[in-house]
Structures are given as structure tokens and as C-alpha cells.
Image: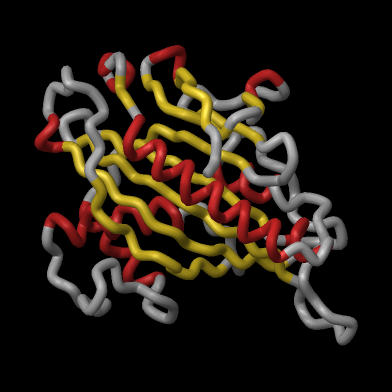
Length: 248
């Protein structure tokens, strides 16, 4: 069982947990105002909490078309042509935010589709009935860009760049026949949709595979995936919004 530390985010406006011993990236580098970034002290994994504009229904549903060659179904058995119900739109919004992290040539595969979970957030929530949350897992496969692997996070601090930085310098998968090399990363996510605030609050726990593949440590990778799963689960139960003025 993973151990967690209670932690304030965004100056105390949001409260949650991080894995015990993890490092606040803002003590090492500049982090954008809409984002919190925490780093594992032992691996290349990272935890990102991000505030985004609520994605509109047409944009959200467009993700299904982008994923129609992979696993586009947000609800088991719904198919890629599922009716645009409120639930489907919310699930599609989660995949939209994740797919938005992809660069050209990247592939996103849905491992566990977005599934509705109950979050309390705070007893003083101004619109609890309009708050919905979803968790799931996707994986990203990324071709190596240049001989040195993927570049570090861009200056805008986007989640995609930070995830890329997590695999910087790690051994990439490939062979001696000159076939394209790729890096792989698992992303455990939580999306909280705040309708009244027109906000999507996202949590990403990114697990790069390369360091474990390089050392031949499948057990280490499995353990890291468990930590990711338990962290998202802990946040589902313990995430609180203490100052709703954050979203004004």
C-alpha cells in the first residue's frame, strides 16, 4: 500500500495528496500558474495537476474520430457512433484532453476507458450536482525524435512536454535493423468537470517505461503502475477545493 502526504495545491485553493517523499517541481524550475508538477525522487514518474478551460461538446466528441483506428469507445459496448449523451460527452472530454497531449506521430491507446467516480471536493461546493469526475488509463507511444530522445519540456510547461521530459535520456525501444525507435508511457488520469466554473480539473500520473525496460525490471514497472493507480484513487477520495475563487 502506497503512503501519501497531504498537500496544498495552487496556494491552498485545492488540497489533496501526493506520494510520500515526492518533490515539488516548482522548487527546481518554473511551473505555469495553471499547473502543479510533482516528481518521484526515485524514478522518472511525475504527477501533474492542471486547470483547463472546460472543453465543449463538439470538440470533445471529435476525439472519437481521431481514435477510430484504436479504441474509441468511452463506454463498453457503445461503439464509436455512441449517442451524444451527457455521459458520453464527459467521457469524450477526458480523452480529448489526453489526446491533446500527443505530438505528430504519437499514438494514444485507451487501456481503461473513462469511468465515472464520485468525488466530494468540499461540503461548501456551490454546485455539487454539476460536478462529475472520471478516471481511467491510457498509454502513449512516441517515436524518438533525434538521437538524444525526446526534448525536455517546452518553456510553456505543457503537460505533453513534461511527460516527454520524463523519458529524456532513457533507453528507447528499437532494434539493430534501423526500425523506428519508440518510447512508451502509461498515463493514469482523473478528470473533474466543474460545469458552473467552466473548468476541467485534470490529474495525470505519468509512468515512463524505458527506465524499467533498460534495467530489465518488470516488477519495478508493475509496482510503479500500482503507485499510480493508488494515487489517483487517493485523490478521488481526498481531493478538496478550499477556495472556489480560484476559478473566477
